[in-house]
Image 1 (cartoon, rainbow, N blue to C red):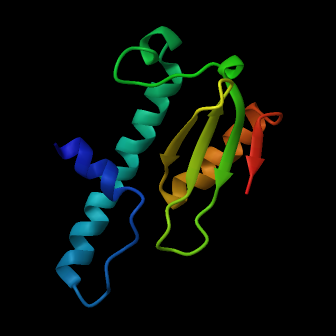
Image 2 (image 1 turned 90 degrees about the vertical axis):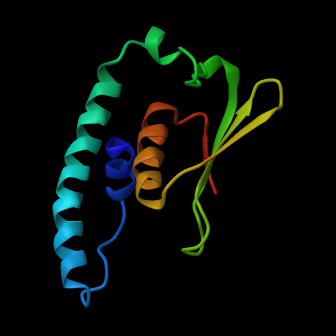
Length: 119
């Protein structure tokens, strides 16, 4: 449970300055959250594809994809989307947090420039 809380806190902005105890707690928690997030990203990058393909993860090969549509949120209340258009015409839509979207967009455009279609 604590891991989930740490991952949820990692990309969140700081609380209002009027809540002194909240700022202290948030600052302490934010440091742990960033460390945990970095650790998990490193673990995922070292994980073999065969393990990533295990349930409940979803892995698609480049041959299965027709395009990758990257829709950034226009206003702060909208969530950016990564939409995978499959070779058979079906679509898989994934919402992604704003700060993670920029990183994901950069990686996807570097790895699959022929598939990515920013909007």
